[in-house]
Length: 171
Image (cartoon, rainbow, N blue to C red; front, side, top):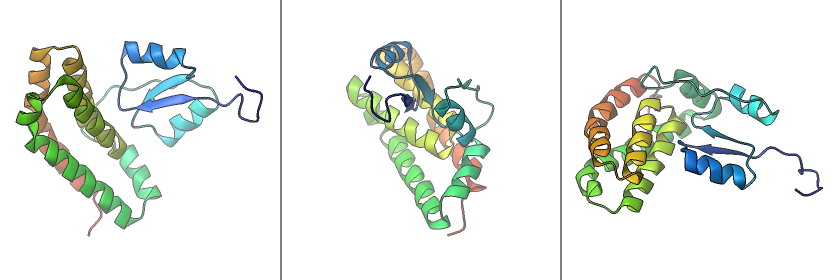
């Protein structure tokens, strides 16, 4: 570590999800911790002062706290753009699902990981969790788990869009 003003700054990875082998690589690279999205302001503050934050299990389709924080941070037009972008990216993934199932492992895993991050950012925690499990199954070459997760994605996608409707600002 250096001796400059930021020599003692904490370095924390923020990701859609993480797995054991990634954890080891990140910690070996000098990270102080790893957190999955969504991350609340309270959790971020705790992490920055050196406390650990427990990741809570999912109990809902969307995280109301994340959505309320987005409402407080973003203008209505920016929030609409965020919702529209999430819906466009998700619909493209659903539309491409069959072709994606035939894609190579790296391409499929990258696409699932990317949208898992988008879902976490907007508070779509169930979609994020499902995509994370699907990505893990793809990387582990577990066809049964991959098929199971991806088969349920369109149903969960529709439920998530319905749940998000209550948070979407009027256009």
